[in-house]
Each structure stands twice: as structure tokens, then as C-alpha cells.
Length: 143
Image (cartoon, rainbow, N blue to C red; front, side, top):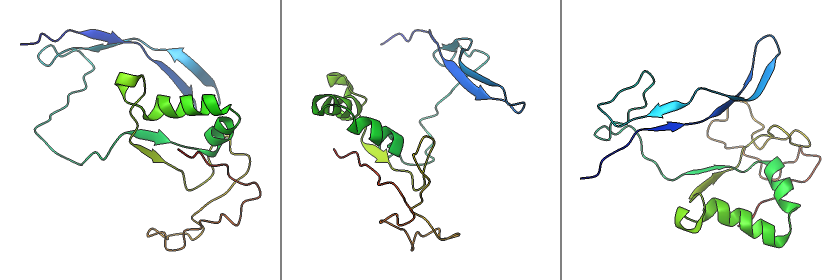
């Protein structure tokens, strides 16, 4: 039988407050991670006997700003970034299996754009793959 140990997780927070002030990367009090049975004040409990939704994979968002910066890298460094995201942990990667591309411009986009131009089109019947409203071409991150 394996004995589970407690550990502390250090983390930082970036916050913007209603008064307009911003705190960037502020050190926060460590979170104590303990096995079930030793419950601290803040607890994250996972009940694996209950199923709420399926997980199809883990990944992240690929924004225009990320693609622009990725394209500025050398071919060798581009390959390294892809490896760090998609290779499994045994190879030093994060093991991404899915990626998400936002349907609107995000923070740090050089210009505004949207793929979804019709308000209320929840089925995306009018999804715009040409991005006609766009004034700057969107570089793509191809794997």
C-alpha cells in the first residue's frame, strides 16, 4: 500500500480591482494538499464515484498573439515549443491532446476580428472561415 504525503503548492495571482489598481504576480499563501482524511481549511476533493461530464483531453488556447510569436521563432525553436506542448510528460512535454482556437480576437491581437458575425447564431450556421472583416491576416500555428 502506498502512503500519501501532504505537500504545499506555491502560487501567484494577478488581479485587477474595481478601483483600477492591478496586482501582478502577487505571491499568495501556499495551499496545503493533503490526503483525504486530513482535511485542511481549503480543500479540493475529487469524488471519482460520481460522473458529471466526460473529459476528451487536455490542452490550451492557441491565440493569434501566441501564433505571431511562435512564427517569429526559428524552425528548431518552433519544433521545441510543439514538443513541449504535445509530447507526453515522459518526454518532458505537457501531453496536450486538444487545442482551442478562439472565434473572436483576444487580448494582444493586432486588430479585432470575429468568425461569428451573426448575433444569436448558436449553431454557427454563419461561421465565417474567411474572416472577411479582418484587416490583418491571421498567422496559423500548424503542427
